[in-house]
Length: 482
Image (tube, rainbow, N blue to C red; front, side, top):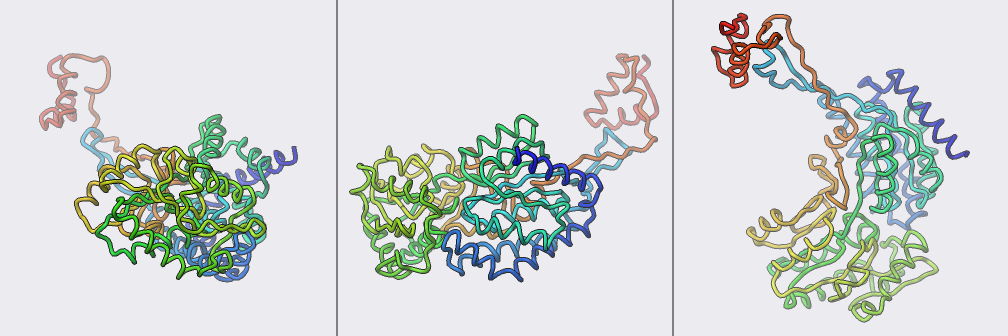
């Protein structure tokens, strides 16, 4: 009952603040964005410490993948805020002459953001930036699986932004459930598809629109004509250099040809040893697994009978410290658990095919991924990949970096999610584009009004076809002799 009271109280306070018009002015929106910028700059050490406590995340990754992206997102929103808020003129059309038309972006109202644990600072603040820019009041529910970052956000946000309009609600499943039972004007959820379905079921009760940022098995297709060492480094950076594989856009499996697989394996081994040393479990540059449940889940994927003998590199683990080394597996069965679910960890299967084009059918036999990657110098193959593979986003010859471009939408398709954000798309995700038509009292067309006659219909048909004579007849009030 306490969780319900807290959730209802937060929503009512936010509703009152929004109804007062407090969040609508550009000055208020800009002030909150500048507050987030100051928080990211002044509290960098504390944020990094919280991420270290939650995930043993290296400081470099904490800054580059989380703090700097929040900073860039704030700056981009501040730079474009006036343009985004300005009504956009559109053609009025002949049928409504004389008139003007525009599209006005208005805030949706009071929105709920439920964030994820793997990038607990970035994935909490980035959607909030879009919600603020669009003029909404916001309830933020950080992930309880990253408790240090959740607690830090609850402490910091009221010090840097307007706490009457932006509130943090901490807690676990009871608190999240209580929040979902409230009526919101939009729900933004980042996480897995299982919980995404639960979020949608709650939203459906109130016809609340949702953005679901989910995941999926992101494929990496590696052609034989690549710069092998560069490709291996970029795959490794996108897999193990992003939270040790605990990322929604992390490469989930590789597809390459049987003849090329040994060369790719050898290159990946060399890169991994250079990145993380001979004993990666002792490396300070690898994040740990977030908790024992996920550690045991990943161990079960490795230890499955049909998979355990497919490990060709790595496989070491330390249950006490929740560490699992970068692990490569070769030709695991497609019906194994590791190929049926999103791995979300440091395990990377390599599947071999006779010809590289056979990768298309394999990818399309699975659910649509959040990201799809192709390493190749073949322009024709790239075009075919882009045309035939459906994914939230796509990169050629790298992994993961598309999310740093604020001009590109970031979001999934099918099982990997719905809706998108980043840059302009973040503003659009939390704004309603309202159609506004302003018509003069001049230009009255009697043909549109009853009593209907054959002559009036003839004129209206001509107007619909943009016939100049019919337009004149409609304006001057002719009825075609009826």
